[in-house]
Every structure is written in structure tokens, then in C-alpha cells.
Image (tube, rainbow, N blue to C red):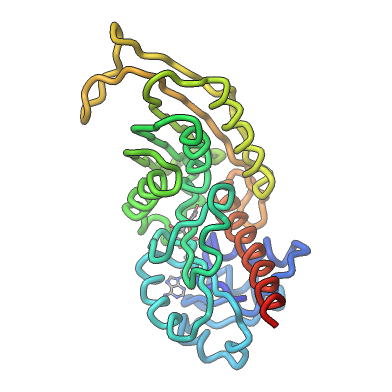
Length: 310
Ligand SMILES: NC(=O)c1ccc[n+]([C@@H]2O[C@H](COP(=O)([O-])OP(=O)(O)OC[C@H]3O[C@@H](n4cnc5c(N)ncnc54)[C@H](O)[C@@H]3O)[C@@H](O)[C@H]2O)c1
């Protein structure tokens, strides 16, 4: 497989694959900046490199042997790259918020799009929060979900900074289409604190009617364990909180007026595996771990399908 984009996400993913006993094999690291740290590291680690972007990858002698390409550039660069990759038939896993293909959040819908030619991994905030909203939606109607993801500004490369609008739009869309909220809002905070902060996520779900609090809390705890299986630094910061609003003290929501029901609040922290940036960058780890877990699952599925048809 090849990675396009030798920045924070692409380099973290490459190191994660090379350091694991994964069946995935790194066939190329593709960038546009010959001086980039990611390309230099790739070369030191024995990975073939090109600084000629997508055309450099397509020109590589072994391109025909590459089965899957990860794109970790930016949403606009991904649209350009996809136009060139689609005719080749190679599978693409998109780590930018370009949202060309269907969304994949492994703990929630890994089985749904295994044959999609272009699979979108939403955003780091989406990978952290969609599972929680889905866990609440499994036991209640969620008319509204709101999430706030805080990441260290040191872990947000130029590609991330260029994609803040896409982060908001793609995360909100996945909170609805994958997690089941009727309306959703996503907020991203780039925190410049030094020393850098760990990735934090706060999730609010409004639940209509009588909420089965015990069932919702169990569902969230089970979901956290499921994500923890492929992102070991993913954990609840404190117990799930429930707050009830009755007719006498409704919650006022500017867009929709008075709400009666329950507000579920979940606070999460993600510690990174420190494959590239230090452990504060859980936002890199949750995205690259989700992409790696998805790809390994696709590889197993493809091998089984091929075996069954031969
Ligand atoms: N940093 C995060 O926490 C994070 C988490 C999840 C998803 N993302 C998404 O991943 C993408 C990359 O983010 P990042 O923080 O790694 O940014 P970055 O700027 O560190 O990395 C992007 C890399 O892509 C290269 N690049 C740009 N255009 C290219 C092209 N046409 N062909 C080949 N290479 C090209 C750049 O030179 C750079 O090395 C963004 O879309 C971002 O939204 C970032």
C-alpha cells in the first residue's frame, strides 16, 4: 500500500504500519515537498518515496502491485488525487474530510462498505465522537447532538488548518448519517497551550422522552471498550452524566425553543501511541488506528471473498 501526504497524519500512519506485525506492507510514501520530514523518515525506514505527488506514484514501476492507497493530504488535494486514481481501480482510504466515499467509523459500521472503492474516515473528532452518539441512539431518539473536539495546535499541520470547514461539515454529517442524531453540530478547538494538551472530546446528546439511563450508560461503556480495542489511549474522563429537564425547567435551545427530556454528557480523552508526535497527539492516533484497523479488515474480507470464488 501507498500513503499520499507526508505530513503529520501520513507519517504517523506509516510508522504505525512499519512498527506493527500488521500484514500491511508499505510500498510508497508520496509527497510534494522533497524537504519534508515525512519523506526523509520514509527513505530512512526503507520505504520507496517520490516528491512528485500523484503523478510520481502512478509512474512508479511497482504501482500495479499496490492494492490500496491512503490519502492524508487535504480535502482539495484528495479530490484531485481521486480523479487520477479512480480510473486505475486501486482502492482508496481517504483520511481527509473530503467525504467523496461513504463514511467509515470502525466501531459502528465497519461491515457496511467493505467493497467501496473510496472509503472516507470522517475526521479525528468524528472517529472519537460518532461511536458515543451511536451508543446513545441505540437506546433513544437523539433529536440533537453537539460535540467539541480540542486538539493541540502543534499537531494540526497546514492540511488540517486548511480543512476546518470540512471538519465541521463532515463530522456533523457523520453524527447524523452514521450515529443517528436528527440534528448535529461539531466544534473544533485548536489549543496553543504549551506543554501541549491531550486530545479531549465533549459530547452532548439530547434524548427525547423518558431516557433509560442505565441502558444508555452501559451502551456507552461497551462502545468505549470497542474503540479502545483499536485505539488503546481512548477512555472516558469521568462517568457519563445525565441531567433531566422537565416542563417546569425546560432547556432553551435557540434554534428549536424549549426542550424537555435528558441531556447526556460524555467526556473523553485520547492519548496517542506517540508513533510520530508525542502522546498528546491522540488526534493523529485515533485517525491512523481507525484507518489501519479498517484496512486490515478489508484485506481479510477481500482474501475470504477471493477464496470463496476460486
Ligand atoms: N492532524 C490531525 O489531527 C488530523 C486528524 C485527522 C484527519 N486529519 C486530516 O488529515 C489531512 C492531513 O492533515 P495533517 O495535519 O497531517 O496536515 P499536514 O499539512 O501535516 O500534512 C499534509 C501533507 O500532504 C502533503 N501534500 C499536500 N498536497 C499534496 C498533494 N497534492 N500530493 C501529495 N502530497 C501533498 C503536504 O506537503 C503535507 O506533507 C487533513 O485533511 C486533515 O484534515 C488531520
